[in-house]
Length: 161
Length: 161
View 1 (cartoon, helix red, strand yellow):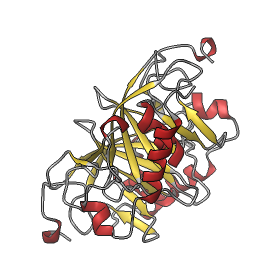
View 2: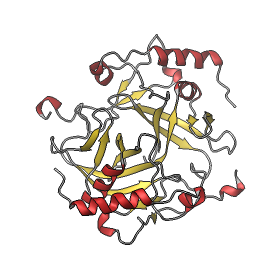
View 3: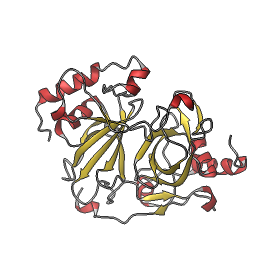
């Protein structure tokens, strides 16, 4: 459930919408937040643990979800598969408190430094969605590219979802 | 310049192409690398420093660039703006030695843990592309969303590019 006042979100959405991206130099050097949403209205968000820096997940945001995230201080994504706003943890309780948001040189990607509530970020039962490693070519043989498990499950998703 | 044997790259590309993604459960739980490329044939790659874990950049890979990365052990991306393969550092010398590649639960994103050669990863002159921070709503006033500089330049791009 979204609890911030609608006017705050609306104001933030307006600021995001009207931010000028006319000058490549300004986008890279100036201190005006002017995020670039792609043809589908989305920007990539990389979510990392605020303490350890470990990458926990990669998701997308649209203008509305970014405005809500800024207003609420909790991560709100846009789910491409469900085509709707996704307040992470709204059902599971595993919300993500946003400590800091960073943007990159051309402002077409975001890094969210967060504190994860609950046993993990990944719906498959892990602390991070990146629980498997891809061996490099030298270690590859056989027909398939075989992954290596690098993390253990931290909870049973059947008991949460 | 790409120095790995073409046959290695071709073999890897074939393995990537033929990896089955029929079963959501298998994609999440099994140890077969079956990356999901989007409608444009791209997958998101998040590049982090292998030692500190800091996020350095976010880019895209297509099947060919991922195969080359696996074969070469250096990051090869696909540049959306230039619509071609992008062997990072091929001109500047600032290559990225790949230590590990991780994939996420639904295998539609990659994390590259790398060792950056040279003074920085970002063409704008910084160690990381994420050198600016977006203040949260409570800290916002005025018309624009004002960014905060959180890193100092590590080199002068005019002397490199």
